[in-house]
Image (tube, helix red, strand yellow):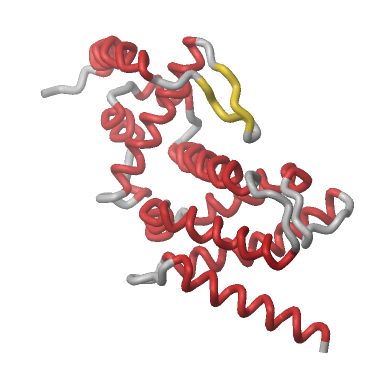
Length: 225
């Protein structure tokens, strides 16, 4: 059957507007929830459908071989709608990486202030357990050569939020200095994440957390020697 983009879009939107009745009318912006109007809800939901469609396609196809038409058809939307929402498929990857970071940061900032050692342990516990729950998607990004998208989004969004996460190891400095500090810290986290979850049989979060705690303590002790 020939694909009729216009008719397909019209029929799909009729069905999807009905589904939106149960859609939560809030969206995160810079980590904060904001209420959406009807049009904004439709835009956000359409972005989510396109994102889900690309992730599903990447499970069986190489990212470079996936076309915009495939993504739009899988999402039950038109190419015109796709380009109204995203510049290209890389922008879709950035979209769901952005969502991942926001979800992670919301968990991270719920910590209560603690002494340095306890807070480090809690922070690593949150880090490894959160990404363990997302390991299928992280492994998919690694396999498709797209993990750097997550790293770039993380660096870009973490810098302005540096002051929102009060940690004993955070230093005060100029924006340029904070940029260097975050690059150093995040590089350790993201490279560990990549190496850990790229394994065929990665360790449980508690195991890798124990290893990292031991390494940090050894580094700290060596600096005092």
